[in-house]
Image (cartoon, rainbow, N blue to C red; front, side):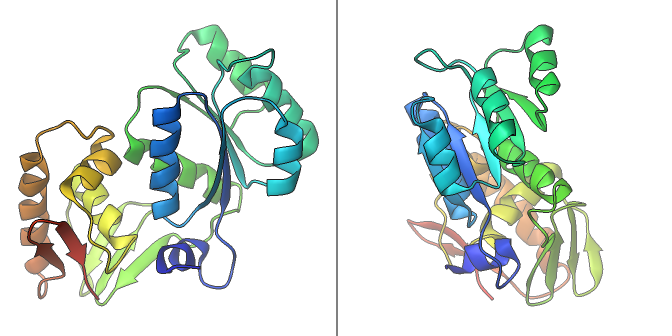
Length: 235
């Protein structure tokens, strides 16, 4: 298990397992990569084929279900079936934003309903909320030296002092803190925080400059630039 997985699982516990059922390959690959980078164990499939067998073998802690899937079985059908297999929480992830679809999802016992497109950072945050609420994620804080990040309350402390960050600054910091010692490129940060890698990379520089200034008001530098590669937080 890597550093990110150990931090996410809270030490000796295994990392949370997320089953993704999503036929949009680009989206599935993106969210799978983001989850694995945070230390999750991920299984992604593109249809309801062999769903029961995959779910029983993988034993997910959470299921991300797209509603519109190829073949005869849609996400609602799989969600109802999942409820008979295990008590793993379910998040419906879909472009269907009609009220009747959302109500049907919640009637099936969904723990959340997220409409695409959505930012990867928002999806990760809502996955964590559901996992914590259901007792499958028990480590809400991360610490690097004198820097403490409470993911649940989204508060940051440096040397015991509260650091006031904007929501985006917090998401940028959290992306780095989740993989200490690992360099993240501007494109990776754009994808994880803004959910889209086609924004101007200078956007990352603006937020990184502000984030550094606020953190360094309370102690020495923690975030470093690897020229030509990206940014890294070092313990």
